[in-house]
Length: 275
Image (cartoon, rainbow, N blue to C red; front, side, top):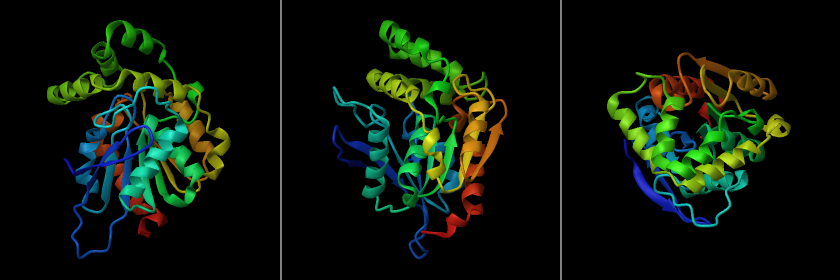
């Protein structure tokens, strides 16, 4: 479900974003939910979340650098700090002072880093199949060889089995996801992966003061459930929900279930009433 597509100019290239706002104009401004996808995805991967959230929240989503309509300029150095700044640039461009932040995979790591750095900007955080310690991420070794020797289409085909169990998607959904994933910039994919492996947010997590929901698949080949259990213990206010028979593509394959969980989480927090 498309919104109003826009671009915000950034050092190192523009970021494409869109706003979905179905709230009647006579009601009070709705809280904003800002979405950050992970490696190989793009903002449209959140379409399945829109029905559960758009009637009560303003939704903002964007394409990470090197994905979708956000280019990765040659020589640009991808870093966690740069990705945090991109989120803030999108928030500022949409006049969003405080927001609920939902991140999947890489987006989850960025969300935690942002909430630790600027807790006053974040109402709640939802991390779906994300990690706080790069050293805990598994099975990234084949990526560089596949991409460099066989190309992005081969990497995308390989990744589909890592993301989804057989039968988790319709044929049309699977074809769409595999095609758009193959269109990601290879330097962005490998650059973000290298950045993630070096991350360790554990010393900063006590600064994440807002409520946090951890959504995690029971069968991610990259991030074990034990890593999420460690993350839950390290956060001041966190809850963990493990979703059965799901792999690393959890937010896409289980969109309705995840969106319902996030809607309930947001509505159930004391922060939900704040603009």
